Length: 63
Image (cartoon, rainbow, N blue to C red; front, side, top):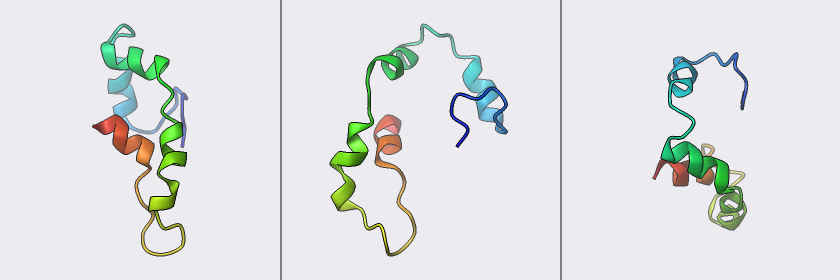
């Protein structure tokens, strides 16, 4: 959506900016590339029928 944009339209972006840069989860976000998860799980999600699934990368990050 508006990744890495200071003008995001959500209150959560304001709250997110209050988290210190040395927080453990921000350090993990910067060091680990989670993009492989979407490709790995691509065959388990239907692209043509039903509602769009939540992005697997997002779901793993939430866990």
